[in-house]
Length: 321
Image 1 (cartoon, one colour):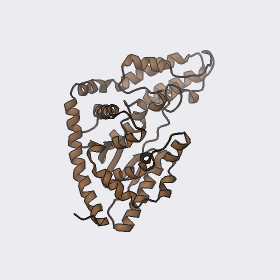
Image 2 (spheres, helix red, strand yellow):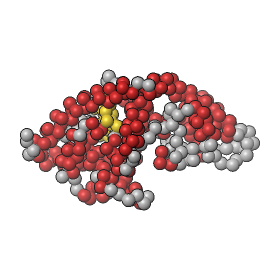
Image 3 (cartoon, rainbow, N blue to C red):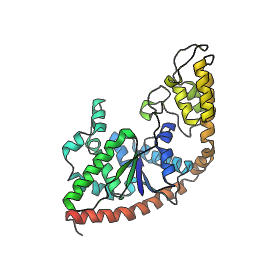
Image 4 (tube, helix red, strand yellow):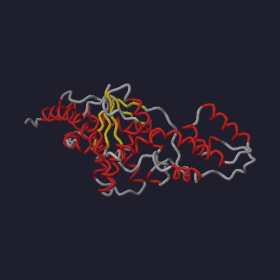
């Protein structure tokens, strides 16, 4: 089955990105026909600096390749290199009710946070639907809290098909392997917008400093501690073996252990986990031409599919060439 997903180039990827989505993306490529893209058009809704968009696109590409992206099997490209998606977004917008977009929780949440919305943010779900439908995607990996994104795409696809014929595959959500929210160094969800991330490939000394700053409570060393309420333990769950994790849980509950001990071990485990990928990431930094060739190859393969789908949609609505 064809699987499609995108990731915004909003900065260097962190371990929350990896355990939340990237790991699942890399696993799915061994089982399905995967199309993954860097969503640089979507990134523009927050008006980032132009130089950042370009650099972050290369960073995301290098991160994915270093972590195991199969560039021969998986189609991987930059969204803006396939402009057909914008034309399809317009065709889809003409069958999309305003009320559907106004009910989108992601838009309402951002407005509630005090963000002054632009049209791009409001129309984001239509472009997202175009991303999915342009490639006749069967499955879209999402977290359980993101099902509405796919429901909106399904609604738009069905409306278009009902009006103009069966042009689009109506996709289904693929709920990715459940991972509890990855906490950042301040205890909130790990996010670049909170400045609380641990990047996948940042220098090891920086990783150590950040982990030692992770927020914990003031329980004395000798007292028992609740692992289920500890940010350090939540991160240990991601990288420790089941046996080691059980031992840490026992030590937490028995008391006589300081949080600094757990932080030091967490540092070792995170560095160890990503160490095999660091050399590849460094090699890619020294061979940007290869990185750009990967994107160019992916673009060519993506356009071959996108062009056919767009032509079907154009003919369906009466825009015959």
